[in-house]
Length: 461
Ligand SMILES: C=C(O[C@H]1C=CC=C(C(=O)O)[C@@H]1O)C(=O)O
Ligand SMILES: [Mg+2]
Image 1: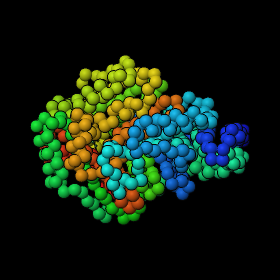
Image 2: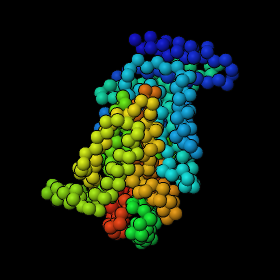
Image 3: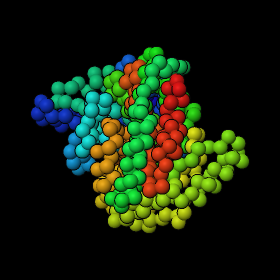
Image 4: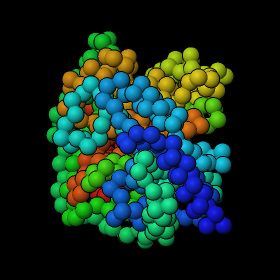
């Protein structure tokens, strides 16, 4: 059985190579097969010494797991990022040789990637490896969908490649990856911690509320950064393992570029498209969890009826509703939010469902939505201008869409909050909060403190 499949790969490679005319012509060849149960994290760990660029993703429902290692094809853009990515993606797909007999989302050619929060804001040294928009089609992609496992091998071939030899090299790497590597139990210790003076940060919140009261803008989301130094280099697989254990109902993700890795456990879906069914979520408005069930219920009820939080939330609902109405049909949005509990806090939550109109893609929807008022503010242009001028922070990929898309127009993107940029023995953690006219700077500061917890607890805090 395995032998037949390996021959299939070699003959697919051969078919593609024979079509190439010029020396520097390249074609992406993609081969998908069903495989036995394989632990996604052990696969990720096994790739550590083979590939520099690993990507990890689980949906909040954990229905889909993606572990991608290596780069078979990369797409990046600084300006006109949606258009540039879409054009590169379509061109590559048109020319690719694809063998994927399964109609399963997240198998075959899948691009995993993300983007910066604000491409207009100057990029600093901190985020220098992360482009304003960047996607990769991994060399090896492990997909777990429901309880089935698939392996996709992607490779860019050239005219002078030797199909059989290439297939054999790939087979050897595949064996190592499928064998897996135990995930280390890494316990980090924080040896240094720094953040912007809280008073100074709260002062920016005050300036934002003034701006809102003067009616220049209605809502502004302000973030801050916590910089940590550890006793040693952080192990990404171990961090992911701990996030999986501690943050249910969250998207757990990692995007590694050499020694830098952007990691998080975000509760916020931006958009999911599966077979043209669209799902978006409005998540904004926050309260802590209670210590007892009774206290928890009380806090949850208070959150649901709190005017300030309902206002914060409603800006997001209205914006998403208007942002996508021309792109879909059958939109359904409940009149009132519900409270969704997470490990460290609870949020106001409103789901949005619709049918994506023919001819539109998930990238079109992201372009419409990002940043929603859960991360930017309202109106969009005015809130972004305030953030650029006052926040004193390079958000990088924090607060921006991160996720995947496949060649059948399926995909899912989360908003990369509750996240950290890990750099060897250092990390930058980010958290923000929606400032509206009745915001109290001290309470907003406390809110960001709780929002730092999901990452802080798995980083030795
Ligand atoms: C900006 C963040 O959270 C957003 C998402 C949910 C609730 C929010 C809030 O209540 O302020 C924020 O808008 C963050 O976690 O860094
Ligand atoms: Mg808030």
